[in-house]
Length: 89
Image 1 (cartoon, rainbow, N blue to C red):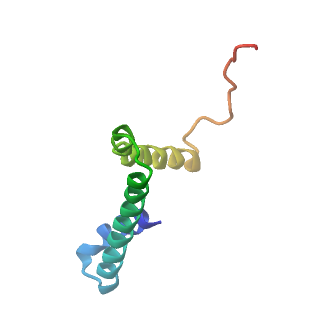
Image 2: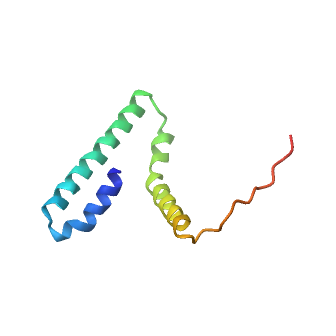
């Protein structure tokens, strides 16, 4: 939700609407707060550096998922589900 507000605010901020600037500031604080919350948890858990490196891929993953959901919602995605072959156990 914070990311959506942030994106919307970046789009509306050039119009200099007072509520757009306020929304942008709120979204920035929310994203900063969430980032600090996650980083503090990882620090307390003594997470390895590989976890921090993996988090750098999160924005690209989120963008990919948004594009994928957009295709599904607009009907551009292949319809139906095709089960892949599995090894018999």
